[in-house]
Structure formats: C-alpha cells, structure tokens
Image (cartoon, rainbow, N blue to C red):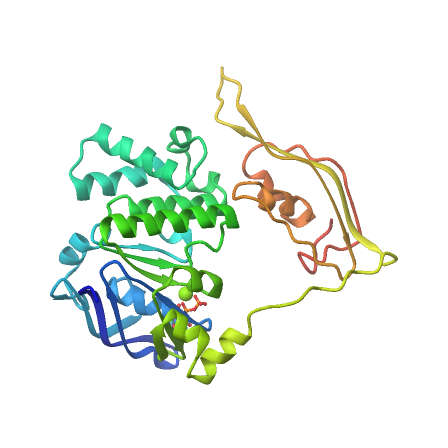
Length: 363
Ligand SMILES: Nc1ncnc2c1ncn2[C@@H]1O[C@H](COP(=O)(O)OP(=O)(O)OP(=O)(O)O)[C@@H](O)[C@H]1O
Ligand SMILES: [Mg+2]
C-alpha cells in the first residue's frame, strides 16, 4: 500500500448550540493513501461533511475540532490560518456540497478561477487565464471563453458544480475532497467528470475522499469505504467486501435500501392538474443603450401534462433548462424566473392551485 497522505485520528467535532455543546463527529479515524479513493457514506447528518470541513479548518464559527488530521507531517487541526492557506486550495482542495459555498456571487467565473491559479502556481495573467479556460473545457462547460465572463447566477446548478470542480482540480492537488460533487449532473456528464478525476488520479497520484449517497458511484470508483452513523465510523473496509459481506447492521440496511422496481402507471381517467403547452423562456444577455441584447432561448416549446397523483421526471443534460421551465409551471415562481431579464411565456392552463408550490400559489 502507498503511503498515507491524510490521516484523521480521534477527530472530534462539536457545535455550540442553544442546547450546549452538541457532538457532530465523535472521534473518528480515517486514512487515505496516495492514489487511493476513499468513499464516506452514511445517513444525512452523520458527520461526513463536518469531519472533512474540520480537517480543512473550515468549520462554522460555532464549531470546535479536536484530535488530529495529519497531512505531510503537520497536524491541520488548530494550524494557524496563514499556514492552512498554504495547503488549502493547492495541496488539498475541496468540492463543497453546495456550489455557492465556494463561488462568490459578486465575481465573474473567470476571475474566481484565475485568482487561485495565479496565487498558487505563480503564473502570469495570460497563462493563468489560458489554464482557467482549459479547465472549463475539461469539465465540459460549453462556450468556455464566453462563460469566463458570466456571474455564478447566470449558470445552471450543474454548470456551477462543474465550475467548482474545475477550481478544485486546476492546481493539481495531492488530495481532492469531493462532497457530493456530481449530484446536480446528468449521468453522461457525471461519467465524464468521474473519468477526469480518475485520469488525474492516475497521472498525479491524487488521493480522493468522496462523500456520497450514491452507492453505484461508490461501487465504481472507491477502493475503500467508511460507513458513518451518528458521528461514528461504524464500519470500514475494501469496497468489494463492504458490499458483498457487510458486517454492521446499519451497512446492511443502507445497501438493502437501494430503490428497486417500477411505479405503477396512473390510470388515464385521472384529472389533469397541469397542462403546459409550447412553453418558451428567453433571456436577454448583455446589451446596452446602443447595443441589442443577445437572446438566449433557455426553454423552447416544451409541452407537459401532469395528472393528479402522478410524478413526472424531468431528465436532461446540465443546463438544459429544467429549472427554468419548472419555475414557469408555477405562478408563484414566475417572479424568480423573470429575474434573469426578459421572459416570453405561452399561456399555461392549470388547475386552481399548484401542488408543487403549496398554499397560496396561483397558477
Ligand atoms: N453550524 C452548525 N451548528 C450546529 N450544528 C451543526 C452545524 N453544522 C452542522 N451541524 C450538525 O452536525 C451534524 C453533522 O452534519 P454534516 O453536515 O456533517 O452531515 P452529513 O453527514 O454531511 O449529512 P448530509 O448527508 O445531509 O450532507 C448534523 O447533525 C448537523 O446538524
Ligand atoms: Mg454533507
């Protein structure tokens, strides 16, 4: 086995709350080796994210960490901020569960990518810009040059997640901590991103800590798995062994809880609650006093019909506008959808109340 790059031992996290000090991580041990992918799985609230946030020195102000997080002979817990900043963003990078945690809404995507590349790699402005565009292309952001000038709110959720992945990989880190990095991505792009990470791992010996609820991804990419519950690691082992012969009852429950089967179809006589026809959404980008804005058609003639008690799935690649047209289907969400700029909608015929938005929503 290669040498360990990050070792957590007896790592504890507590939060000061109105009920006093509340434990979130109860003294866990975890090791990741060079070139290895370790997955952390477990129920929501079990301490997966906070364990890694503690190792990065990124706990909320009411959080306290103790124990050890050894990286390159240094314990990261309690390390002064200046020393942590030498390591974070360069040697250890993190893809956060919520993309807006690491994207500043006030700065353009390009500037946010270029700044850490310049700081950590000492590149000039032109070279850093070229590297930033290259990274956006690698994570399959369409029209990367133009996107460098976009603000985070102008991107879809999946595109924002990919920008964050580009930021995390731009400096060839020794460890990548990825917290649910592919949840907002469609399966084709998800597969490409996982391949990109695997390629970096092979090329640079990058180690990866992958936090996810998706056991299929765990099966595919992880060498070893840690199972967490209520702040503790209840089981750890090689991936094949964890899936084939789980020892802990909770691990067995987790594996057995993977969804199976199909939903029965809704009978045809059930009333239609939402009948949307030829829905268009157009955004006006840029433009000024003497310049016409560029029109971006985000939704183009979508028709959808939803019957009472029916669930419809909207699938498609990241940036294919599912969020936009979902917003349009609900009267109460129109104001939000309109905030981009200009919207052209076709009439939506619907029932008296929108079940998606709940009380008070008029379709
Ligand atoms: N700032 C905070 N103040 C108080 N408690 C917090 C704070 N941040 C997190 N917690 C608590 O810490 C516990 C662990 O949270 P954590 O984010 O690590 O869960 P998780 O395993 O990543 O869950 P999920 O799968 O939902 O992301 C939770 O009970 C959560 O409520
Ligand atoms: Mg989490």
